[in-house]
Length: 563
Image (cartoon, rainbow, N blue to C red; front, side):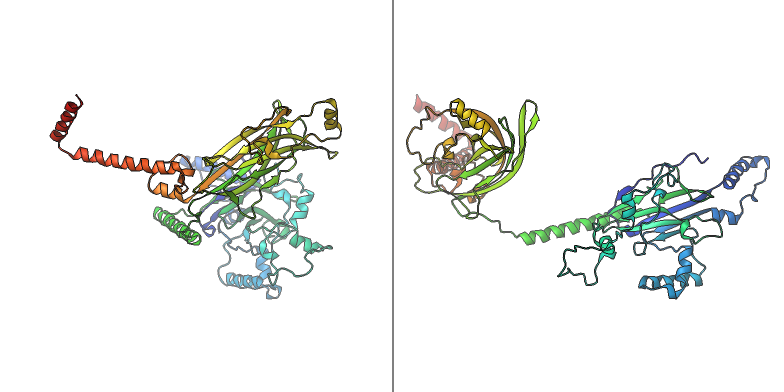
């Protein structure tokens, strides 16, 4: 009969929106001995033979033996149940030193005057008790379910067992930060115990059992941990071991010569909420969330920051994702932004940057360096009434890929540029690069042995140099070599007052610069076309409201005039 036990003694984590004070646990503790097993077996035989007039063997299990061999108790969250040892300790007022001890002294006296405590072997340690996790670690970790003599705690477990985890013990008297000796170069053992462990704000409750022999209760060596319950302020409840939920009970084997076996059952008996209470709670949460949303809206305000009239605000969050296909390893990228005419940026805005040095990783046939380097950029475009350029230009991001080896030799791996997207949203751009090439063996040997290679004096030469004023740019005789590619991930946002006006009037314009105040000819053409469509729509409405005979007469006159 003792072969069926629950071997899953790990922690169980529950999530509840209800208050933890409503948690109630039923603990059943029963001794499993040869006498008890024989008694149970004989009782089953007697019950099966009652129809034949057999008698019950009540002499094998007396009432006193049954009460001493098993106990069933309901325990609430942080409910204090005194053990036999605590009853003897706290009844002496001289042994009470702290306010909590004196409170326990009063409660013990009240229990003495009453009929006594309702528990016999099962008792609890609450979060406020001076109780540490110095129990033998082999009680809850074994193949023998809860106890074995072969298991032993590790070195780390022994050291961590003497450290107080509760946050109440780590508070200082004045709750202030020390003004001197912030760093303690010679910490004492007590200082390490109090300060060297990460603060844990979880509240803990232990359900214990006094598994001593009858008549010898109240000894510390006979105290065994039955169940541990932890919770934090976010509604997480950690239980070890888990509720049985109809499964087999857990087994506890005591130490010593007797090595008695006990059967443990843990069940959740918390009262379920009624449907009307659940609805009331849901409505309360909805009202709370609505009030919190109103509070956040009051902090933000109703005024949305808008740029002035005729100005486009361009904001971009970018990421240099990766680079691949380059000759050497340990790559890094130097990049900068170029602003065309009528574009400006904030004074503190950085227009350049450098990534970290990244080693490559082989993926397929390519060596890829993953940078994942973020950058942000904000610029403003101001349209003018008289602009020489028919279509304004967008900013450009120029970049240069370099490599650096262990001998501090750097080499230019490639040049490239990315034009800022004209459409807002998410854009993934892959830009192919090239580098200047100097023909001859000497240049290749110099690049391999001492580093260095031909570089561009003006990085804008990758596209169109800013100093170029002619009509045609000739690059005849300029030798280059195709290298690798760089991948960018760009998130662009555009903001202007004309966007809001167009949304209110339900206007549909395809180009951004037509919405910056109507200064260009395209804006004027769009305005004229919209007025024409409105007039045409009015004429169609008026035509539909006319009588049918008048419309037919008018159409006949038009046919005769055309003939």
